[in-house]
Amino acid sequence: MRSLVGVMTPHIAAFLFVCVILSGPGLAQEIVSDSLRVLALQLVNQERTSRQLPPLTLERKLTQIAQSHADDMLARDYYSHNSPEGMTVSGRYEAVGGDPWLLTAENIAKCDGCKTPIDESYVRQMHEGWMNSPGHRANILRKGLTEFGYGLVIGQGKMLYAVQTFSGPGTAQGDDIGADTKQLTPQEQLEVALAEINRSRKANGKVELRPSASLSQGAQNLLPGRNDSEFKVDSSGDIYEAVPAESQNDWAQLTVVIASCGGCGTEPVRPDAIYFTERWLGDDRYNEMLMQTDATHFGFAMAASGTGKKIGVGLLGMEH
Image (cartoon, rainbow, N blue to C red; front, top):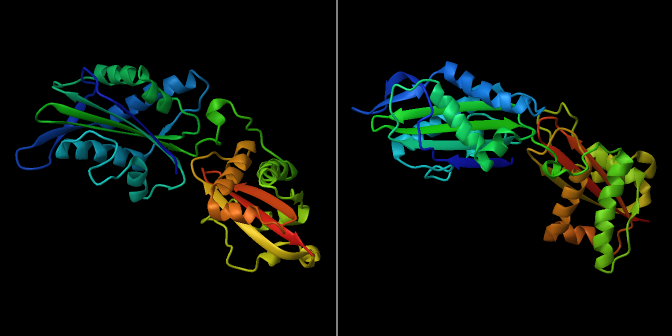
């Protein structure tokens, strides 16, 4: 999972609180109402839709962790995306049952000396402050987000903590910098991955690998289906069985390499093929596999869960 964070300490208060609870003897605090969470979401969506970005929806788990993090910062007097134990926004999301492969993002803010009662004008002022801060603005306008959570709390000492949380499938590697993110045919996926690997093999004095449709089909057969609940590769069986039966005897040796990413979009595209191969080439163990002197052919395939997780599989073959 990828996670993104931003912080802001505003000069003025920004929220309306409507209910009072007790979080300890004599420690009164107020938390935000659902109606103001809706207002906060409306403000975010106005910014997004005006830029042709899809609107977000209010989500229970994200709201739960946003409120709990605001409460925790107040109760333990700290101001950070990480709790004193090191828990991050992605960890908090996973702890309440959130999908670990989604992209998560978080904005936080605090205000010392905020006065109550506070009306909705403060929500708007806080929103403006976040939009005027590059890091927070980037989260609010980020591609690949679909859901939103909101929490805030003010203590007896007039210290206010506010938290925005976001999640979604994310985007392909490089999409935010204008990378070519068109979907690729299986043949194009192989061509992109093999070009990266052969560039490295050539630099290391190795013979370039040849493309193999049979090995690419074997890689595809190892990938999970889009509706697979676990969406992971089962490589515990005989790799040869993944290759089409009519070509299994062509190979004296097969080696499989696997990589995955989270929060990286909904469809396999060109930057994913480059990302997976770069990960393999940057890992000592996988690099050694890809640089095998006796290897002759390579096959490659990718799959996406549709909710942020992608998997790349490469099959390295030594022909008889």
